[in-house]
Image: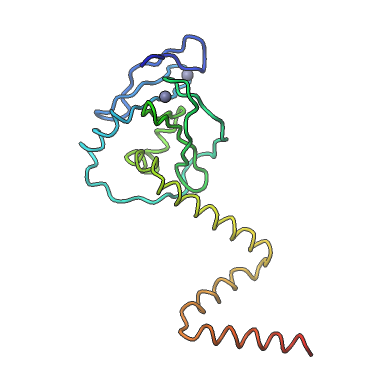
Length: 186
Ligand SMILES: [Zn+2]
Ligand SMILES: [Zn+2]
């Protein structure tokens, strides 16, 4: 790689580091950031996790890191950001040109704890990212509704679930809205 230095400090030089058995990366001895090449990661997955089950984004242990652009340590272009999970997730930085993932100190360990260390390439897919986006949108909507309806919200959800199970739900809804507008007129 053309640039062997971490931007965290002058002359902080990346050193070879084994993230896991048979998985080499480079790590900055000063800030513990890790630079991992997909060309090293993908064969490791192939060897150890060829039959990994499908995973879905979930809340992550740890912290929500602020969104701050990072430059690729190799080509100096702005890296793309990818959310790892729903709540409390951190962002992975990825340079598609160099095929390298940037992990801040401790982030690999967080991925391991949440069982996502073997899903880095999946996290970088559009499908994973869209999935997270739609889950975040619906939880945001639920928060707004909870604010609007207060304590009644959980009751409303219960009634909605019940309604959705009724074959004649349209009739029930029509009846309900009829009877409530009758009341208004009185
Ligand atoms: Zn560093
Ligand atoms: Zn790059």
